Image (cartoon, one colour):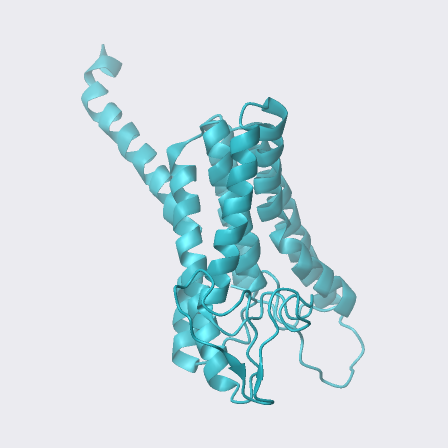
Length: 281
């Protein structure tokens, strides 16, 4: 009787907690990027943030949205992907503007030809040699060293739209295949789970975690732990739970490196600028 008398309180409280957890899933993933965005705007320096983070998260979340069409999952996870894509595009826009403004002698590199997917029919030129730019397969544009280092935000948008179109078309043709749908979901979450591996590799290669924010790694660990628990408690597809656990293990491995290298620091060496973390926030 006493439990029944508390239903008027417990039911709304349970609903409130569910809404709070869903809201944390939708917006929690982008929160660490807010101070990074503000810092880049304040300093006008984007060197500390790797735009490959944006690439990995864009691919992962586009694939996750396509997976939803084959197998519906929790709505907060779908909206999380939409919000993350918008956030990564904003980060790319800011980083591109800052990098272009700071590099006065920047050789313009593009993803596609002039006016393609822009509705603009202007000719773009390389100011250093006054020659038309190399397009579609030129050494500047599709050289692996220059991929994802374009000079205009529009080029990133073109690349994302091209990837989305191709992946969407393949998904449309194969949507009735259970094997394809499950593989698509696994690739989506596996891509996101691998986001910490470049940082792990960098630390191990340098035998140091200098320049890495321990607070940020703790934030990744707590966020990934919450996310994995959410997957398990809400019956999300198995791919989500497995890759969430993998993310937690990678985060713990990075924390283990920080502890080990702090106890046994490497011998002093001439100072060199370390490349930005691939999971830099």
